[in-house]
Image: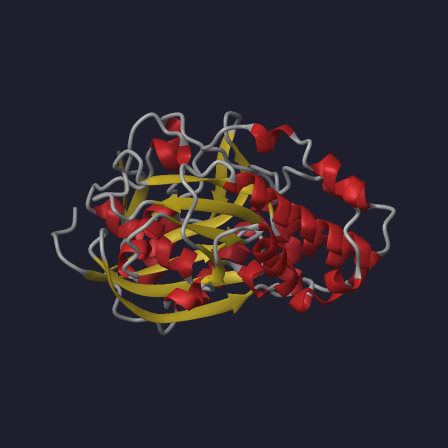
Amino acid sequence: MLKAGRIWALGAMSGTSLDGVDAAMIETDGEEIFGFGESRYRPYTPDEQAVLKAALGRWHGDDVAAARQVVQAAHEEVFQGLEGAALVGFHGQTLVHEPGGRGTHQVGDGAALAAALNLPVVWDFRSADMDLGGQGAPLAPFYHFACARRIGADAPLAFLNLGGVGNLTWVDPRKSRPDEEGALLAFDTGPANAPINDLMMARRKEPFDRDGALARQGTVAQGALELFLEEGYFARMPPKSLDRDAFDDMFGLVHELPDADAVATLTGMSAAAVLKGMEHCPAPPARLLVTGGGRHNPVLMEMLRVALECPVDPVEAAGLDGDMLEAQAFAHLAVRVMRGLPTSCPGTTGVRAAVSGGIVSKPGTMERIA
């Protein structure tokens, strides 16, 4: 366990968009955020992305071994030159996430990373939550609570991460702790960037719809959108979470559409999933702060602004870094794990009770924190 007091921690995140690895430093005591440090981004090459995509949905085998090697090398590279951290929070790359099924699988070896960095590494953040009946996701909400306090919010607000999958965190910053009843409600809204990116790669050999340019040329197919919204996931009460490819049938709904209409429709689906999710908020948020790559898509952002009554802004409008928020979150969570503080609770993952979970690897040793 760490002594009380603020420390510098380094966090990393490789998300479901498979675009690359974010790494960021923050100064925190696991409860408050005292400062933001240096950050770095290391993109995956097209060949590396192909290796990772080949391993999606798999637990074992050569594809998984190849993905592990890519993830490990990319993280070691992005951490080079980021100095001054007392410990590291390492999420790894999710290949499988099946709440209520076989479990969750993030590829990456924290023990090997600890040896390479000569620093303690906290990893496998999700398994302990799922062992206690939780969804294992999303895990950033406890950091969102700290961010809401950091920016001086005095009324409920929401954070929306538009990564490969969208996830929403409703925060009441008037509560004293993130695990206090009523402080947080969090869940995955539905697909966000992943289907758009996959379709762009399949049809145009481009990694994403830059600036929403293709979606802007198209028209949303209302029939396909209505069929998409009939998916039972949207009516389920949160907490709830998704695997990256949980909505694969979306592609069938746009298969016959021209490229621009198909991308516009997938973009509309991503926005509509968020709107359905907002219906679950305990009270209307005073503000929606958007993080993740989707905030750079002006078409997606405009769809949300037109449909929602509250202001919709990128998190930069509140002085936060939307590119690095999730990497910062795992730095924050690593400190919480080392101090025995909870990292999830019933309101964020549906876990039976607040739990602090992860594996702590020190150079040459490994212990599980219960």
